[in-house]
Length: 127
Image (tube, rainbow, N blue to C red; front, side, top):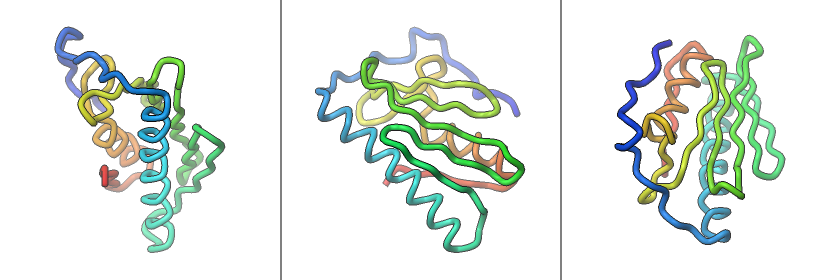
């Protein structure tokens, strides 16, 4: 899988300052949405992705044994994603989670990585 084209790091905006409560609410909302999407796919018999959540960590287990792990990093106010293609860190910028290296939006990259690991087109969207 090819990596999204990365703009220079000077094009990746600085994080929007959040209070601890705002950060917790934002990351909880993202993890809730991802988990709800996976549950809906399972209920519709679209794809069998198992999810396991423990606090700020959400593990997605794909057919074939690969995993994607989402993890909150409160001290850094980041959201981390680990997948077969590598690890990615996201920071909150103007109501979006953007990769700290490429500037790619979280849901877009999660969709690309999950599609590659799931073997079919999977779309995660912010609701």
